[in-house]
Image (cartoon, rainbow, N blue to C red):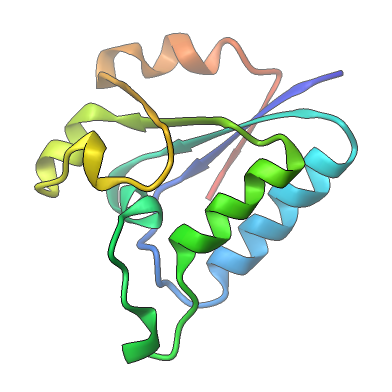
Length: 118
């Protein structure tokens, strides 16, 4: 079994990107591969509580990411500096996330066999 890390950097409501990445994550997890998700930059907004996507006609990304637990995707990471730069705290996110510092990201990535960045 390989370990996959999906690195998400784009804003939560950036078109079809969210659905495409989720499809890849779900497919990988469905084949009993270990999956982790790292949220960097504007990617931290994927898990932000209180999204109101109905105002823009877009899906609630936080709700979609919560469904990943059904596929045993439970390892979520975020960069502490990305949260701070966007005025967010770990408690503003809807799932348990491990916040790591920028200097420790390379170390985290070494724990995975495959890294998919988007």
